[in-house]
Length: 225
Image 1 (tube, rainbow, N blue to C red):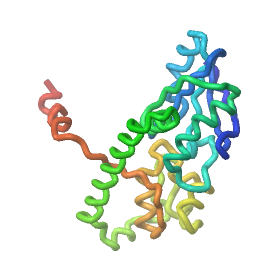
Image 2: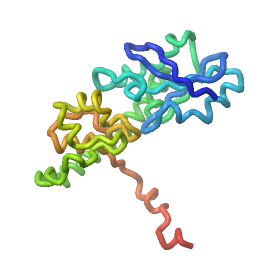
Image 3: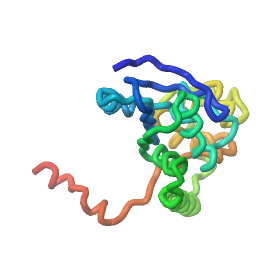
């Protein structure tokens, strides 16, 4: 397996990618909070079957470039198609996970499945809005954060480094806040609260689950036995 990172321009963005093998193209699209390395085990196995297995770092995921605006469904759907062309292929087999699956479905005109994934995201966002309304943070909590308090634990960014910038996007560009494995799930809402920044792309750190899923989690006493 090779660890070399390659780069290619596609759909107006510079994408980084990993690849193994040669032959018909297999495009492997990761989701959140993963990276192209999520496919490190599968990629060489597919290559061994006579394929060129490519896993890009999706837009906004380092070392791929950060887009100038938040990603919409149409842009996400164009990325795989543009990558296929940029990689010199006419077509490809697409494997996707999480929002990589959404991009794959949209790119291959499986709009019903893509819309189903978007509807799930909308449900999560609704739950987050309800929680924010029901449990608003008190303003005095802002005083708890000290200059050395880590706001972004993934990239070790303290509060004092964020105060040097005037917006969430500037912080992402200059100190990589929100660019780690959690992709801003924790630090983006914290920055929004602390600095009053407008953060449309913040990913909620909570998700709704079915009661049956919670009931299936073994209790501490059961786990000990």
